[in-house]
Length: 459
Ligand SMILES: [Fe+2]
Image 1: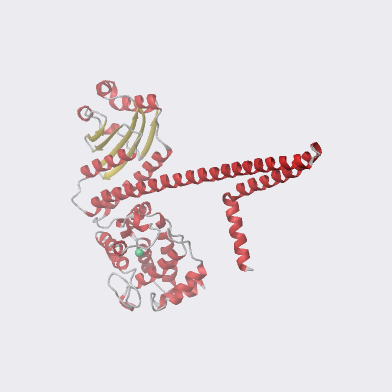
Image 2: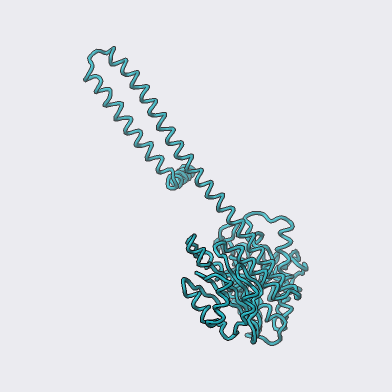
């Protein structure tokens, strides 16, 4: 009985997803064929009375019917074949786009992590590299520039299409450079704004060597207190008139995302190592950067923090202790920013190398946080959030109460939320199954005291 219900369900789902049209065609074929056979026989016997003549017509009619059926079958098969070919082609294109996407994000990550982790990377070099990264990803643009605005000067450091020496010789006024976080200017507005910014004399010199612009996207960033940087990605009037090129919605969205990410990166760089700065700001910057890197993290940090706080309250932690636990839980996976996106989102078993890369996130997280005086205290909780009560965890194989309490709490909260969320390789488990899993791992993976509180909260 169960088998027949399953078969019926499978049949209905195939029927709904495309089989429906074919079934309709076969049904029509059946109806028309039956009508034809029935009416043609009657027609023949009405016209011809001699059974011999009727019999010879029957053969011709039968042959014609077989021919018609074969033709019909061929059309049906060809139709299905061309449909599946189109689907296959679409899938191949999608696969290529996904690969390209992963590759380009990894490239950006390399630039950012180089700047964040290796103290010797120069802002100047970083900006040039980011500029080249952007123009390679925005094929519709044909002009662009990257510049630094300090208190007393505007320095163009790289360009595409423009004349770099002319731009720098104009000695532009920094006060005229209102720094947008993000802006899109179209038609004459881009050009008029530039004319206003430069004044008539300088604009004359500028336009001698540079073409009029049709559309511009500006990205403004504060790299340091006294240093702002701007990126301008442009489409010239000529290109617009010849090819009707404009920025696509996807490009605009991707550049907006990039602006957020770069802002987070500069804030992280500026904050790391500075004493007594707002912990909240740094943590938020870290999370913003991580969320950009790993889609799954969106909301995960908040949920782990909420569950951890609820567990901490049950365990009787003080307000100050809960505050500290909150920061540690919010930022526990920050080290994942250095794990390649393709590994984080892999739909299948990780190789040994990939698993090693994932395991390193706890050490990198600790390293990041230990550079900030206000976060160094919580770095050890981040280091140990994948230890197990039975000593089989990583990175140090700590056992029992040698594992810091906050790490034991975060471990339960993290595992529970991970199990009840959709992952690239599986659908979310139900709360009931996840709770059973936590309970069955009491004193194996998890601290018994924390699991007891968890049971009180969720069962
Ligand atoms: Fe983790």
